[in-house]
Every structure is written in C-alpha cells, then in structure tokens.
Image (cartoon, rainbow over all chains, first blue to last red; front, side, top):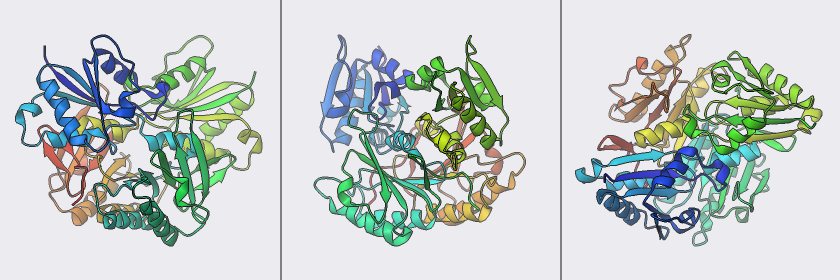
Length: 244
Length: 244
C-alpha cells in the first residue's frame, strides 16, 4: 500500500461548505489528524482512526502525520477553513525541511472556505476590493511586525481581515490593534465582528471603529475592517468595485 | 411565489470544488445569470433559464438579476471563485443603492473557493502567513492606487496574490508591477504563476522575481508573490508560520 498525506480544509463549520473533494479524501482516509475541535467534526467509521491533538503542537502533529503516511497510511490532516491560511499546510511543509524521504511522499493540499470569506459573504461584500489578511496572534511573531503591517494596510487603503484577534491569555493585543486602526483610519471606518460563522452560534455585528471595543472579539471571531469607501446598504456592508 | 437572489461562487473550475450549498442553490434556481464562461459551467435543465452576458456589464447584470428576483424568480448569479473577491457580490450590493424595494428581497451570498487559495494549495502554502490580495486590473482604479498598494504590501512584508494581472488590451500594467516589486523586494523573491488552476489546462511555474517576465501571466493566471521568508521545499513553495 502506498501512503499519502492530504492537508484538507473543512471550511468554517457547516457541512454544506465542505467541498466534495475533501469529503472524498475523508472517505478514503485511514487516519485523520488535527486539533481536537476539528477532528470532532469527522464522523467515525470502521477502518479510520482519529488522532485529535492539542492546539500549539502543530509541528509535532505534522511530523506524526508524515510518519504515518511514510508507513503507508492514507492520512488526512484537517484544518478549519482553508489549510493554507494560518493553518496546517505551512506546518507540514516546514516539517519536510531536511527530509527528502518525506518530500517524496504523495502530498496534496485541498483548499477550503476560509473564515474571512464565509464572514464576508454573510456581511455582504466588505472584501470586494483589495484587502489584506493578517493573523493578529502574537504567538508566532512580535507585536512590532503586527503593528507595522496594520499601518501599511491602512495607509494603502486596503480592507482588512483579522484572524485570531483576541486570545484569552493575551487580550491586550486587540485593544492595541484597535488604537492603531482608529489613529490610521479615523472613527467612522466600518468594522465587522463575525463570530462562529455558518454554525448555530453565528453572530454578526457591524459598528464604526469609534464604537468598537476589544470585548467584541474572541478567538472564534473573524474581524473585517472596511477600506475608506466601504459602506452600508440595507442590512449589508460592501466595498465598491471602483476607486475614483 | 417569493423571489430570491443568491450570489454564488463556483470555485476555480473543478466540480469537486463546488460546495454542496451552491449545488443545492443551482438545483432550485429558475434563472442563472452571469458572465458567459461561468454560465457555461451550469448544466441546463427543464425549468431553469440561463442568462449569459458579456464581461464588463456587471451593473446591468446585477440589475437584471434583481429585477427577476423582484418578479418572484429564484435567481442565482454565478461567479467564478468566490463572489466576494473581485466578482459579482459588490456589483449586486451597489445596485441596491437607493432601491429599498430590492433591499427587502431575500438575498444571500454563498462563498466559493477563490482562485488564490486554490492556486496556493497547488503550490504548497505561499499564503500561509499574512498576505495582501490585489486586483491588478486598472479598469476600475487608476494605476497610482495599484502602485501605492504594491509598495505598502511589499514594505509591510506581506505575501501577495494578484488577480487579473494582465489583460490583452493593456498588458503594460503587469510589466510595471513587476518593476515595482523588483525594486521593493529584490530579485530573489519567489513568484508563482498559476494558470487555470483545477482545470485540465492547469499550469504552475515558480521563479524568482529576477527571472519573471510579463508574458508569464495572462487573464487566466493568478500570481502569488512570497514574503521575505517564503522558500522552496521539495517541489513546493511555502511561507513559514513564524517571524523572528
């Protein structure tokens, strides 16, 4: 038996947003590897072993998955959303460094609906023009890098989408980000907090930056900030296609 | 009969990348509206009328779709990729301005796999860290805005994804973009040209900015530029998760 490794995106939560390609890969998997809440979304079946693991052990998880694939298993590493956006794909490729044996394996990345695009769809079309996508977690990069990127994104008049805006352990980062954004974009810029999109707990709130407070976000929230032209129409928010 | 308008993303091309949610909306549609090559992807059936239209008539198309929904039809507006990324969602919301009657309609956006994420998945994980997404077409914005955004994205050390890099009518824009990128990022930065991803004509090439030429892109190409840490491993390209 030849092993394989598929790095699959499960989308934001709803079954109706899982691509047929990912569903098929899971139907053929012998082993499914991932962070506990994502593996919990997979229905167990005969012939498939589930390997849930904790957050922040991405490199260990990637190596364990590669090791099983090298043993001949058909392994699927699952991420929420898209595996290439702040998820497991980068960790797996990092684990391939210096390992030509693993590099020779059959490895594929299957894209998924990433949280910011699911959130944008519910909100309207706030990312309908140029935008920047930033991970606000300072777990893997210093705050200075985050602040520099926020300022460049704002000064370039990009709309912005933020992942991992506010962790329970370091909630002060998002308060600082809001301050930077208010200074760069002014108090009237629209900001959308999209929590648990496509799940039964989905909740969407759009306010101005002046009204935004850090408590409006948690780790299940994707935050979208409009560009200078982003506006409301009816119950939606959208960014016009044209710049004058 | 109550009308409805669904703005649906068909993904980059392969059937296996169309979400079940979109498939279901198409199964219930009475009318499908969109640019000719996207409508051509829909299998005709009894009870459904296809309304293909030309490129660059997005506002007319949006209004025609809303008018049919107001008449009680179940209309699906199809876009390639994700409808909220340089596609029909913004045009539809723009068409709602000043029309409270249309704003009262049942309108939903269904996300799809957008081209840059499908391309990134084939390439590896070049968008695995913060990135900026820019439409290089100067059809709806002046070149000065594009150049300013390229410079801010480069100076913020974002990876970048470019849509509509090079039109047949104005091919010089992409040559200028490459010059700006070489000046800001140096000749060694990796750039990936992903053409017709997930279709039988899929073709992927990664070179350095120094080796890149304008002819490597056309309107069916998504271009991905790495950040300063983006590197090759085996046959893939990825952006590490950490910044020192």
